[in-house]
Length: 492
Ligand code: HEC
Ligand code: HEC
Image 1 (cartoon, protein in one colour):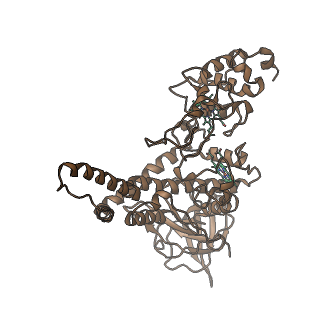
Image 2 (cartoon, protein in one colour; image 1 turned 90 degrees about the horizontal axis):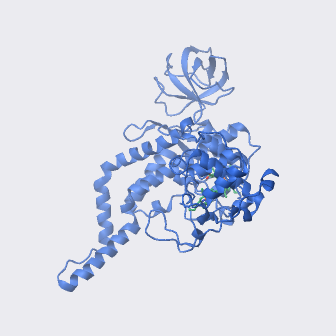
Image 3 (cartoon, rainbow, N blue to C red; image 1 turned 120 degrees about the vertical axis):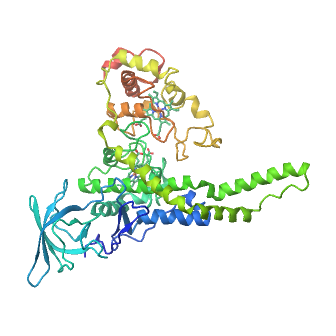
């Protein structure tokens, strides 16, 4: 039996008609694995916690039973088509003549066929396929059994539903999971030995992208990361991975990111129902009481921890109806940016070609580097060694009034990120001039490395900086305070 077969299928029309969700079970090949929950989910009070888990499970499933939520811009795979003729084979199954849907090619073999319209749409199991003869426009599909009820001409179906996501999962569990974790939380068994840590995909944020500031990662960016690896880190290069496998694993990484982001969006909505927030409420009420009781011995006593917990559960129950909308909103808010990520006008394209790499251009770059306009030197240091004064500061935790306990810059995941030593010429986001241009234009997402494009610097200024930065490893640190010497500049 083929390992990635879909052994069960349940169609659930999600809350408020979000569309179709298919249960893609690839049981048989995958080791029993479990998606971990975020620590914010674990911190929720029992009802909120159960609600978040249910919402995530309903729309994403488990590693062994993936759910394909059609609301999301994920290419789940499968060959979509329409029936053009139906014939019953003597002593055998049903033969379908089918027309392929737009943008898909008929597979050479197929295992299962899932109906999307017509009389068979409510069948509990997808229909088994005996064989397929793929043609240019029309193909013939011989079904393993005689179909009853009989499909009609015009009925829509998908062959091999979800096969790309299932292939992606298989590759991910084999090649990526030990570092990035089953849920993409960056906490696989190997992770604790690594610095920097593997990316936690669950914020929907990736660092090295070609997309505009604030936008999601594109499929091409993911392909570059997986193909080339990330130099200077443990992220390996999968240069020899077959193109179809690469496409599948990219889709799976996007899907995992969306799963994590969905969970995070629900957590953000429900943070008043976290144990931490309730403890904080309790503390504030006690402080208020202590102040009030000084003037008024009969001041109302503050609620106990148990009372606060009960109140939270009651409030949560009262909100239950609105929660359906929270859920729909979270899905919609998430789909937009992921859909946009690959659009051509979302990819940073310099308005002018690279400025010639001359001593004059590098000098302009040097002046900008040391200017108050960019403040590059405050992080990367005036000699580019990554030792600027900002590395000595205590930095604020994003979205909080508190600072990290240790000195130095941190990324959104709370890990220390030393500014790059630019004299080493190692570029994690790609070493072509256009890659460095994009890094300066959009910054490094999720890190303090700022975006300079659009409003801050002109494209021409960014090219001068690219020329200067890329020459640093060859010119040595001394030239960052003196004029670069033309002999060094032309010797490259
Ligand atoms: C040996 C450990 C290891 C393995 C195996 C591994 N990675 Fe990574 N990966 C990392 C590390 C470490 C980073 C973070 C590097 C950094 O922060 O600069 C990373 C980062 C990434 C990123 C984030 C890129 C960005 O722009 O932020 C993606 C995407 C990624 N890996 C995908 C994969 C995929 C897909 C696989 C399997 C095909 C895989 N990784 C296998 C260690 C690993
Ligand atoms: C607020 C601090 C800060 C400022 C200001 C800053 N950077 Fe960075 N920069 C960083 C950090 C932190 C990283 C490493 C992030 C990571 O890899 O996670 C980095 C990384 C880089 C990289 C490496 C890119 C790669 O692909 O590996 C380059 C190049 C760079 N910065 C250039 C600049 C230039 C040029 C400027 C000024 C125009 C600048 N930076 C301003 C903090 C800063």
